[in-house]
Every structure is written in C-alpha cells, then in structure tokens.
Length: 479
Ligand code: NAD
Image 1 (cartoon, rainbow, N blue to C red):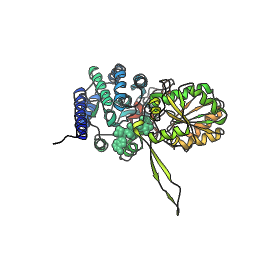
Image 2: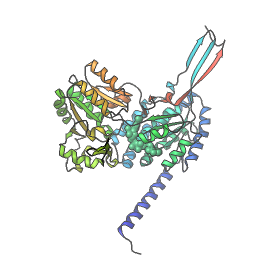
Image 3: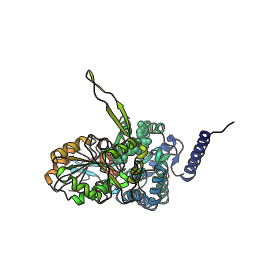
Image 4: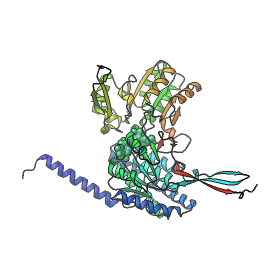
C-alpha cells in the first residue's frame, strides 16, 4: 500500500489526539467522568452531603477554593492561552486572581423576616440542588472558578459542560477546586464534568431530571437553548459594548482607559469596549492620544484586507417587496482570529509592529461590520458623530438591544445620565476602563456570568438560590 502525505497527516493528528486525551484522563481525576449521566449522579449524591455541613464549614471550603485558585492561577492562565490560542497569559492570571479575591461567598446569603402581631415569618435562601453550568471558551477557567464559588456557597453542587476548545483549562480548574475542597474536609464531587464535552452531553444535562437550574454563559445559541428547556434558566449572553466620549471628557484619560479596557485579555471579555462613538470636536484629539497608548491606526485599504481575514462574508440578494435590492452582506466572526494579539492581526495584512502596539484603531461609520459585530479581538472602530444626541442614538443602535454593557467618558452629569437611561444595560461604566464594571479597579464584587437576558445581573451566591418561607404564628416575637 502506498502512503501519501494526507495519510501521514491523518495518522499524526489521530495519535496526537489520543495522546492528548490520555493526558487529560491521567491528569484530571477528581469529579471528571466519561458520561454526563455519571457526572450528574455524582453531583447529586454530593449535594446531599454538602447540605449536612454547616454554613461555617461551607465557608471553609470556599476559602480553600480561593487559595487553590491563587496557587494555580499562573499555570492555569498559561494552559488556557496555549489550548485556546486566545487572550493573554498576564491578563488571564489577573482575571483568576480577581475571581479568587472578589467573588462573594456565603456572606451574601441573607434572611428576610416579617415580624408582627401574628408572629414571625422567615424567608430563607435555599439551594436549588444540582446546577448545570455551560461555560465559554473566552473566560474558561475564570467562569468555572467563579461559578463554583457562588454555586457551592449557596449550597448547590455543579456539573459543568465546558466549551470543547477550552477543555484542559476548564478541567484543570475542576480538578484543583475539588482537591482543595476534599483537603478542607468537604465531600468529593461538589464539582463535576465530563472528559469530552459535546452538544449531545449538554443536551443530556439540559434534559436530566436531577438538574434543577441551568446557567448558560456564552453566545445566543446556548442562551436560547437553555431558555427553551422548560426549566429555570439563567442566561448570560453576548454583548457589543459601545463607549461614548463627549467634549467634556478628560481626553487623555479617556484614551488611556479605553485602550486598557479594550485590550484586556485581547478584548475577550463580553464587557470590553467593542466600538467608540466620539463627538467631532474631540475626535482627532482622542485618536492622537490613543496612538500614544499603543494604538495603531489602519487605512481604509488595510481595514478591507483585515476584514477579509477576520470576518466571513455571506453575500445575499434580499428581495424586499417586488424588487431585489442591492446585495446585502451578512458577516460572522472568523473564530480563528478571536483573542489574538494586535501585532499578529497586523502581520496578516503585511504590517510589522513592535510589542508596544496592543490595539488596532479604525475610523469608520456605524454600518461597518467592525462596529456591528462582536469581534472579541483588539480591533477598535471609532465612529465620529456631531453631538451627544447623535452619539447616544448610534450607541443604542449598535448595542443591538443586548442590554449588556456600555461605557462613557464625560464630565457632564446630564449627558452621563441620559446615555445610561437610553442604553439600559446591565453594566454602565463611567470614566474608567470597562473592567471596572466587574470590580477590577472599581467598587463591587466580581463575576464572569453577567445575566442580562434573564435579569439576574451580576450573578453571585444569592442568584443561585430559591426562596423558601417559614411561618410561625403567634410566637417567636420578643417585642
Ligand atoms: P459560544 O456560544 O460559542 O459557547 C458557549 C458555550 O455554549 C460553550 O460551552 C459551547 O460549547 C456551548 N454551546 C454553544 N452553542 C451550543 C449549542 N447549540 N448547543 C449546546 N451547547 C452549545 O461562546 P464562546 O465563543 O465560547 O464565548 C463567547 C460568547 O459568550 C460571546 O458572545 C460573549 O459575549 C459571551 N459571553 C457572555 C458572558 C456573560 O457573562 N454575559 C460571559 C462570557 C462570554
């Protein structure tokens, strides 16, 4: 038999896959199962054990989880970038550190009381039981760690269905969290997952009778899927955050903050600045200052070349009424380039720059696909508008009703308030990089599951609870 190049490539690919799977099997043992059904069953049994522990003991497990995240943050960040080819190791480390330090634990579980002539009524926050959590490729270990802390603090156990492209770092997090829990005296399998995640396994999880709550962190397809399941579901979906800059802003600071926010983990976070809408009187000054902070401006010609690479274009002739209108294009993001360094993206169009360049900026109008699409790479389109009225209208339009996140740089309180009201997003950041909205350099706790569509907002342990009322009539009042 003759062996050609294709056959050799296939054999190499198969062997590499087998080696990779074997290494996953060998390395990760705690809570990792071959079948989704077994992962769910194990988490179900573990939840009964968790319920026998006091809140104080539960909090001890949370402390151990926080320490394990900090201890493993560097290697996990590295693995995550290696396997996904997305983002930056230094920023993924900071995100994991943020999760360890600012994800709320049991302290946010509060009890409400109604006290009066008829006695005392308590409303307590109870766990759902076993939660099915679907996690993204963009913040893989961050989401596993953050959701695990919140879900376990609330008394649940959790089964993860991670993105197949981020399986190693997701399972690494499951492994080190479970180990830390067991070492701190907790039960096995508070966190479980499967070795080879797939859509089929996710469907098993969604439909399994022992899964009481679904939490989807990702794009529109998975959010729609869990919301159609007939179960209680929390959907943390896509965004396309616009950043408005008006003539009253501190332009130097605005330029610096925007580049910092936009380039954090190479623009992977769903909250990161995805397009800037700037009023004409400060437009040039803003762009000049962005260039002083690591931005490289591309021309129309270069932008066209870059768009051909990072977007896939589907040409459609759309019939409207009786006539066929001019061709309309539908774009989607070419995942190969998501989360890549600005330098690497520029190399694809023949531009070589130093490591100081972290962002690509481009002057364009609001219809440009760089504005319309959630690119998740450090390409920042900048739209010029006449005034704040137009800025607000454009920003609301390009956010596409996701109601996710928006930013604004301004010192005019009326303008800030008007935009905040009009855009109606879950997170609104004023005069700071976008990441201040998740507690990084801003007040408030952190989360990597921001539930806009279903309204829970920035999720935490309290989100993962159901309310239970207990009524004692004519007693227990001490007044
Ligand atoms: P993705 O939607 O491709 O994948 C997310 C998860 O859903 C993965 O586990 C994937 O395997 C699963 N999935 C996707 N389609 C599915 C289907 N039809 N059936 C079963 N499972 C399915 O997203 P991604 O590229 O990994 O992450 C980026 C997206 O997630 C962006 O749109 C971003 O805005 C969003 N995101 C939102 C938040 C938030 O808190 N709101 C946080 C992170 C990411």
